[in-house]
Length: 258
Image (cartoon, rainbow, N blue to C red):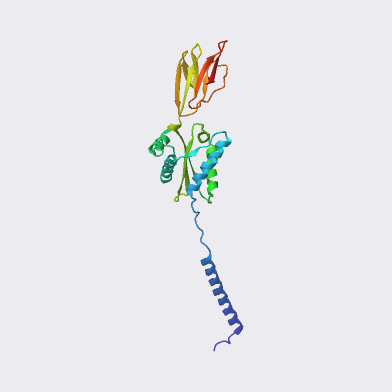
């Protein structure tokens, strides 16, 4: 004979089973509806590059330098090199076997001056475009060599590119600065004194006999300094100007712009 059925125990068992099933269904539904954790989406690197140009010009202007204009050919050269750095396991200014000026020239940039900054950043938490641009610029500002390039008085144009590598979550940035040959500076120095005069241009020595003149054509903006002059202040020559060395009654020399 079977023992008498305990209706209360049976009811409790059925409730427990029903509760478990309901809980399982609810858990399955919530797991299904829960969004999957997505990997950080890469930024629009063109936006980052534009922000770098803007912030670099702000830095130059705050430091007393004129801003630099974006140049398509420098930008193309920067993009090609950023892609190479991203795809290769190398990181240097000559990683592809060429110098920055050679890469600029390959992209038909007829240059007087070419300078280059490079950097990379690891994306572990996700960046905003302005934030990533700021980190690149701040890193260059705090590095003496890169800072010198950013504040160079010899450059007038820039090209910036940023590339993202999905395999290692790194952003690679290349910032190029240039001055085209069309912006070369040409000026004259003439000796109107009765004695031989010595002067330096960017630290390089020159000399002029009485009545002699010399034309300089330069890609940068070096300082012009006359030796044994009354006015010891250096002059930064301007394009198409003429500078003369004159002698006063006491025999002292003076450098002047005509």
